[in-house]
Amino acid sequence: MIQRIQTLWTIIGAIFLFCTIYFDIYTFTNKADNNTQSAQLLESMVNTILFVLSLGLSLVSIFFFKKRAKQKRIVLISLLITVFLLVNIFFSTFGDVNNTNIKISFGLGIIFPVLFIIFMALAYFGIAKDEKILKKSKRLR
Image (tube, rainbow, N blue to C red; front, side):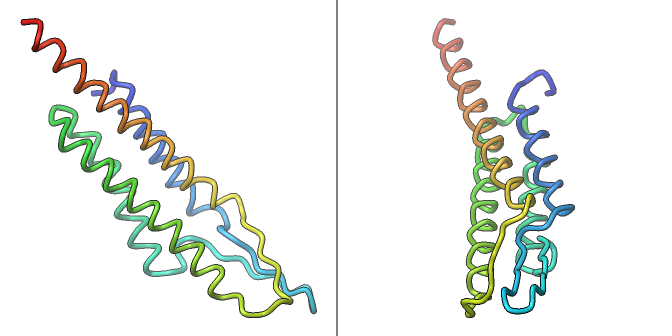
């Protein structure tokens, strides 16, 4: 289980996604009075649900190492949920801004879900590579 590289990619991705809760996603700055307001991931209920689903699925996928097809599906679903989480963050960020005096700056917390997507994609391709190797070895028998 742990010797497979995609397990390591999944664990590293889950760690990055978990780090998202400790950093600000974005910051609003009002240019008129320099009032600053930060937002974190778990402030929105939809973002919290998507975060927990994505993190939970990525951790559960580690234990499906013997069932590669199911593991691939779980990794792909987790990846898609995280993409939807990022889209939701961007739409909620720019949906809140209806004033031209507000400056938006994204924080460090927005990078971690992107890194999670990259590592889950690496895990997905690693699982596909394992399937390909196993099919090739079965053909040789």
